[in-house]
Length: 558
Image 1 (cartoon, rainbow, N blue to C red):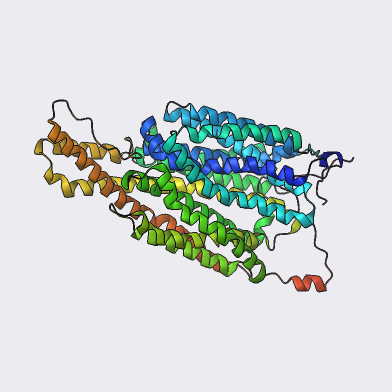
Image 2 (image 1 turned 135 degrees about the vertical axis):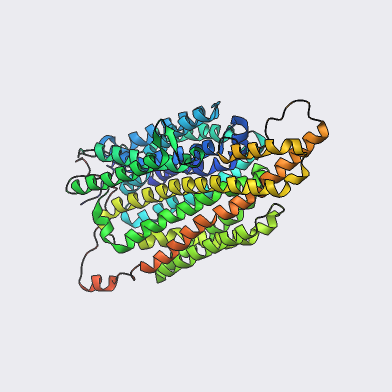
């Protein structure tokens, strides 16, 4: 299969200029996945959002983004990648403005869903266009720049978000997308080639509907389970029934995909015949599970327990991102020379170990310097994961399936992040229930007797997930007429209980993503050794060009 290419008229602009435009849009999308986290405490406080609401603000975007990636790639084949890229920019930029004006958690969640739609429409087109406009001898360098954008966004998100939240307020983490989106849209209209694909593809609507509903039900169940005590949520419908329905729908999706294998499935099963690729999908999902699962509790800890500003919290975490950016290119070159299996194993082990050190260092009276050793170790580990992971995943994939394999591992990574954030959030809510009560019981003797029952009622209310803890607020509505001295004593008590309870809950919860990362490191042992390229050369077998993204087609005749 030949790759789609741009005609001579379409090449009037340098492909490197097109790369800049694509990366500008891609950077904005990735930035939004990290910049929001740093605003969680202030956002939760201003909107009176519960932890469950905050989890939905994060997961609504990621869920829609992940579920629609392959579908959006298919739509790019139908209507052209330039058109879908520009539509995605319009939708994402408009939704960003709406998020900035949101007046309630429900409004913010709805607008985040629309943001996720825009991001999903945009992202697959970047890889597709790059594959078409760059010759094979320059494609690696282009993809290297495209991939480096992810590392920059990882660092810039918390730092930019911290500065905006500290100096301007949480709404500006969304308003900042407006000028970037407008500039990218104008440049895209001018410099992006209007690639023409002469083959019409059939979109698997049934498969898209099945996987969307399945993942929504599973994620909803994980997020809302604790707040509904894993019981009824809509009339007689329970959380457990919702989770079971999600799993059943996911099973039906794979049955449907099996029947679609001779047509144009969303998931081509052939790419999973390579053991290395299958293992790397598990590893990619585990890395996303670990990273997103770790970040939410750490953000609340830094700002609500250690009482750092949003910018100070971002600077505290920045050594990990900086080190990973420096290490990643070195790890990628080393993987080319010696293979990625052992580099990836060491990277996952270091990341898990570093986060373990971080947890052991986290206390109510911890300083930022106490957290630095764990962040440094985790940074080295993180830098040794992504490049080797991609090298191992794509090593034995047939060239004609390279585009489909790339799209699949990216989707798997996003879904791992959704499940990780939801699962860690559910465990965190359960642990908060236990640790807040334990902390209160240990210190309740210092309170006036007439208020102790009210304290217990308040903590039970918090345990249900119906009160805001994202901003460190667990104090009840105290009746009027309480002496100022007693009120101050109660405020101090609730602050102390929250800090002690949250730290205990966080320390217990974060072992879950660390355990997942540890299992991923063990899974790397299943990777097969490097392919024997020499035997291919000796047999004079020509290497086929890499295939375009899933569902792409030959170019239109000039």
